[in-house]
Length: 106
Image (cartoon, rainbow, N blue to C red; front, side, top):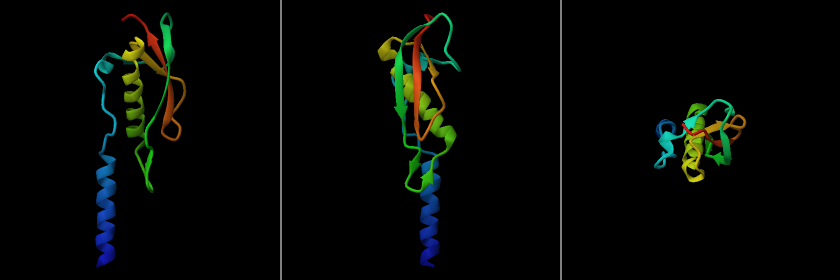
């Protein structure tokens, strides 16, 4: 009986963590466009390295959720550097990713 209660608590915690979003969009970041690759004719404004927790204890967070949060963090960096677009410099790895920030004048 006690093990069933413990299992129920663990499953409830896991389910609630999968719905958590730890990163929120900063003011001005909604206007930052996400590009699949480096654009032509844009000025590079810098690079950003962002990271989130990809694992909480033994629980592995959803790849989609981790990618979304990394993208949001990168977009949050754009307005501070005068960038209106971002592009990934590589795939996410262990909850981290590098991004290039661009001013394309759109």
